[in-house]
Image (cartoon, rainbow, N blue to C red; front, side, top):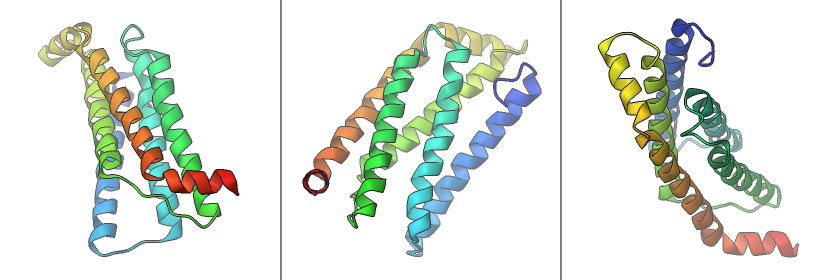
Amino acid sequence: MYLQPELVWSALSIAVFAVAAVTDYFDGLIARRYSVKSKTGIFLDPLADKFLTFSGFICLPFISPDQFHWWVIGLIFTRDIFITLMRIFAERKGLKMNTSSSAKIKTAVQMGFLYLVLLVGVFAKTDIMVGEFSRYFLDSGILGIMLYGVMIITLYTGVEYIMMNKKIFQRITTK
């Protein structure tokens, strides 16, 4: 939807993205508050996060290819796919991977960053005053720098996952 040439589709996609992010947050909040867990939910929740963030990251180079490089997005994808595959593999072996609070922060940072950039990308297509500000903001390069920050946080949490779950990784590789 975001990549459609009509402004209405891009704007609507922002609303869909926001609703998905907010409902994901409340789903996790309710599950933790009422201690409601299922194997399906434990598997699907992080997977849904990945689909949502990946769909947002894929749009970025179409907004500004000079700022949002595919290799940076590729590193973010690689970390997320690797950790997800390790979680699936560990679960199949009957092991549970620990999740750090920084990984939850990473998801919130990614979602907030994506919402901001996607919103700026939509407004930059308009002729209203916010559009002029959005084009200036986009042209400033700050969003590209912020993407590098998101990448660093993402990679850090990947290393943290591996270190926190080192025993699980050792058990998996020795079995």
